[in-house]
Length: 375
Image (cartoon, rainbow, N blue to C red; front, side, top):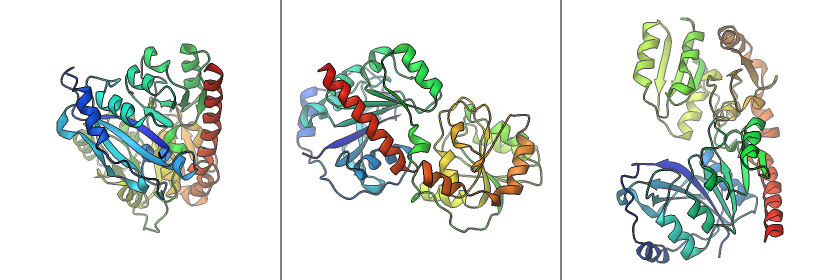
């Protein structure tokens, strides 16, 4: 049987509406009828959900990679899966309650086909029964966000390896679990794909691009405050409820801001290539994948000095950090000097997936050694 890695996203739509669990026997029959994919060639592309699992296949740690997402009812359930970028398979399982998600579908899959060699749980996570059913797996957790832990102690006690975005997050995890194995290796910026994001040679018709959800913690207000009427800015929106209000505010201020999105990864890369610099304005944010994605597209980055995770990627050769008071002047300076930077080369030398998967493989070996001692 092929060795598997499963990355469990905390995406769930619609949200579960009841605690009415489906029948375990029926779910097992569904999984038993499913033919699983065989090992095949992979390409480490896509977004932060795909790149770590695909990197593990490419490095020979496992043979196949899946992403599990959740649905709150049977209408969107698709355990058969769909092919994703690079050779990954997406499956949509039913969630039977609020996060951390209980799922008879997940338990049935594990019962029928066995636990994966590596189970990655992101964000809001799954409940303790799913992690307990994968006791033989290397169970990895990353919160994706600024809080170091977004799962309760009865869930986090099952985790074998915590990936964090900054050392302070590792400290917070060890305050709950003193013997926790932690590695500062945020899955977004560290598992960068230079085949997904790259320079296209497009004309630079924008001074600045901001790729971010239009939610309050992304701090679009800081960008609007830093822009002058002579700047040309592009905001690429994935999701969020503030787009119309922000568009209206930019117009009220007389700023030249265009809005685009949502678009796929190729579209994001094409749009980023039209700008001279990228910005990250948030503070209470996990280490955003866009940090190294901007850089791989050839853009130096201006980041908020208050960013709590991910400032390690902003160096003298990749961009600038600035306080909120300094942000307008720093943005002007970076736009003027953008051509002096080669951020893509820096990322390729340090943070593309081959570098990061080697670090991950070492931590997985440490986790395996601990499990052998505890057995």
